[in-house]
Length: 187
Image (tube, rainbow, N blue to C red; front, side, top):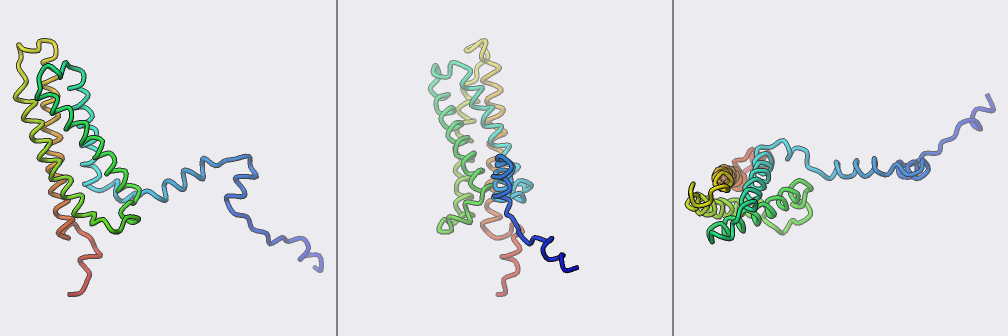
């Protein structure tokens, strides 16, 4: 019984020291750090699903426009500019919200910023869709008619997605988005 304390060690180790001792299983640690930074509840929300749809459909729209001779019709240059710009900005905004930039940049009024972005994106996407749809002629482009028509279709769908995002952003800005922190504040 007297040997008991000498047989027990009370050393503890951190996961970082174990990873360095095992020869660098640091990828597992990196994945754990990334998932703790991500807002997993945002991924499952309707605004996130709409933003993912906007990114996917916007990519399809500008890829279809880019696969044609869009420089022949000046309106298609506007469609291409709007589609690519909104696709890039939506991807950046999605990543910022996913990784919690609103917790780090507290000076930015995020609900208002997101609502204004989605409202502006809706208007710009609508103008791009109308310009694209007006420039689709079955005999003018021949081979590229299907590409132009499909781009106009995806432009209409992405416009509706931006409109729905603007609506949900408005609800979030007004506080009707189901935010428990704003609904439990005594008045």
